[in-house]
Length: 420
Image (cartoon, rainbow, N blue to C red):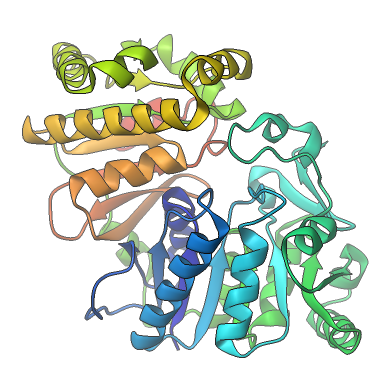
């Protein structure tokens, strides 16, 4: 069988692809929807979109386009992958996309499972936690694009989507997969379309995978992939061999950080004590992009012979970010930084750079698109949910980190554990 994954951003795609490979499913990731079917030898295909924070109508259209392409590839089951912090506004996009995929696959019920306990994302009584805090009390409350002010997944889904939400609590998961299926069937009789699954540990994810392995459509973060992959893995594929195909190669590295998440702020602060670093001037990004990008590339080149790669960062604390957005506009400043990073990456590639360590989903998508990368081999894991990936058609390797993933020393470990 083939699993088709529709991921709502770039780092989310590499996140789930890494868990599928680690748990025995040969996986290929494509950047956006290819114009035609591809000859791919894999158990799973992951399509990375840029649909997390766009208008709901576009997110729905892009996701349905990806679904149609995956069906043409012969995929029989589908997985809508979103962030483990359920990044979404009250108008979408998770709810509308879920409704559209349910309708397109002819299904009436699916699951909601954003849990990733290894990274501190758990669901209890339908409430999403980040480490020991409710989602609404975490740094995600201040997210510049998708501020999360409610932790109740049932309320969030019913606010966004057209149907009714229900819960399978942790006590039911403790009783095993049969108990979960029985509860889901009872909820279906009550007209529940979205079944929120509690998960406090990896065993709960394994139980989820066993319980929902026959569903045509599932939705969740990358943690659910652990349980499902172990149910569906093809013994003919060796995960170590699959990861070897994506092991980092190439010369010259640079670190680019566009995320303003709490963890990325800590990672940038730590790395600035270890390696050359330079903050992005948003005003110059708005007014002098090409000239400024060339200056930044010259700076990177000047510091390329040191032990650790130089860092360019637009990462800032919430208060500073708010001041920048008030002065220049939230969308305008964000787009200016993305376009600046695109110009920098384009120039560095021409100068021979082949390794890019990137923080932030939007920034990662921009980098991959700028490099012209359409498909990846998934390589060894740096941190849970963050693998090295290597382009299929060119000698470029990427480490693409979602904002809150990785430990404080992530940027350095990505290099020291996988040296040039």
